[in-house]
Image (cartoon, rainbow, N blue to C red; front, side):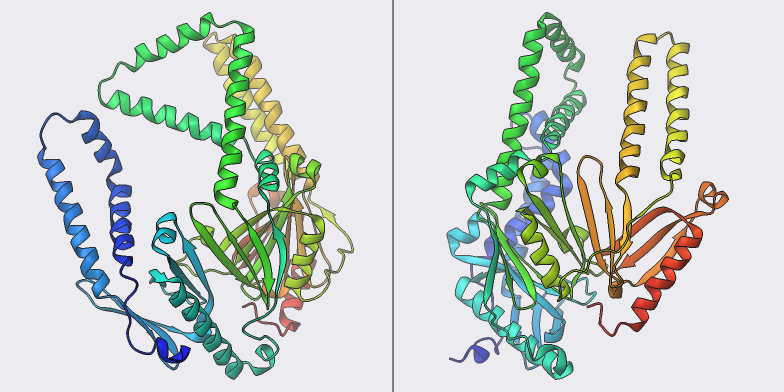
Length: 497
């Protein structure tokens, strides 16, 4: 059977899709009702309450509905589009024209791999709020469907835009940009933000205390016991405790990195970048050059010491797609790989920025004024309440806040080479933003009263992937920059997508 004939008749997904549809329903139910479920579990007595019977009934109904939904879910490929029919009580028909398809990605959890199936995600350039996803296809069917859809897409685009697509074959040679080994992943994990796991653990502790209060557990007694235990600790024991917490946080950072980026493979094929990664859940992402609107790259001090950069693509998205799904991050890159990504995405070697510009000193002064006022008011309140011991900590907090703002001011800069807009910044590390000017969709100026009185403004640049800003720029400079950007957009014959 020819590949084109394989999907012409309506087909169901793999029978294992029933499992994933049921699990998806249970996950949605648990996400909405988990506080009630925990309350019932912690406060239950022997036998079933009427609430437990209701939830059991909902679960059984959901599973039966999921099975029926599987048998009413069909997909097939016509001459011009991919068609998906679904719906339990209401029939829904989703038509996806080939020219709107941007990429076809696979996602495999542990269960997918056990059943030898994969989830298929179809990214489109439209604004439909319906989900273009097949829960479970056999690997062979998924590969054949992806190949067919990309062939149909190339044919449709070559008919609409022959000069732009003829040079791009469907199957192009792959060039591996990056492949991370276990050793490199451990290095990446060591350079991550180790305060995030500490925050997560703190959240778990405080959440547990909150639910303990809900169920009339004596939280005050628990806190008194912890406080009494802390008072008995010597300085050396405190140091060991803090060291232990830090080491656990580092181990959690490494573990999270291994789970998320295991066997990361980042490559270039045709006019798109692709990455596949993950230990328990293998995710595959693709980013077409035309769909990438903004390129970010940067490094924190640890990454700078090792020589690592992380790259993030920000892609065009519709209103129905979450921003997080339209961006993905590649850690552990070197400078040569960053340059390769820049040049291939732009289609030519990145031209140097002729001159970098700083923002006004008022970017720091405006924030510093409010920070000083806040610290003085809080300190005065502590003095009034006879809590003089807290004042040094409040002043230290104020100095820290102003220091952070000063560092941000020192690092913030912008510039253009005529075809791209660059914005640099950061606090602890360095962050870089690169935006091709022809992808700009809207430009505006925002002014607060402080800026207005001093002839300053903030430049707002909107793209299909979101907004970038350049704050506290002289108004005359802003007008010249806007004229330059608008001119470049108007004379460009390139499409933003």
